[in-house]
Length: 123
Image (cartoon, rainbow, N blue to C red):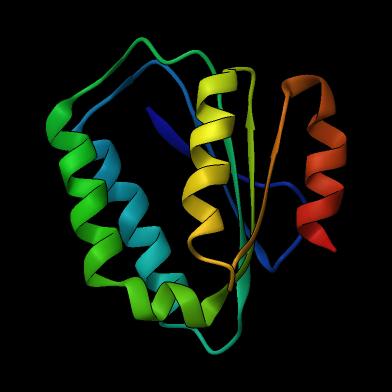
């Protein structure tokens, strides 16, 4: 499940991912992101990756398709991205991916650093 959450800042689009994630979850979250990409101002992304039981391969394909087809808009609109997870491999993967995209300032945080992550992405 991917759920939009409110962390108290208008310019931060925030999501919590937990449990099973399917294509419909991806599509629903992407509609929210598309709407934000169409808006006038830049924004920051915040994602909490809690315990995920299962992510459908088709859901991963859907997200990759979305990223590739909207890559230019994402680069123009997204300034920062904070990822909160206790999975070290996911933190390292995100850091590696965003090293290739220096236009987006990205940081990964553990759940014990949740408040620090929210403060950082909101600044």
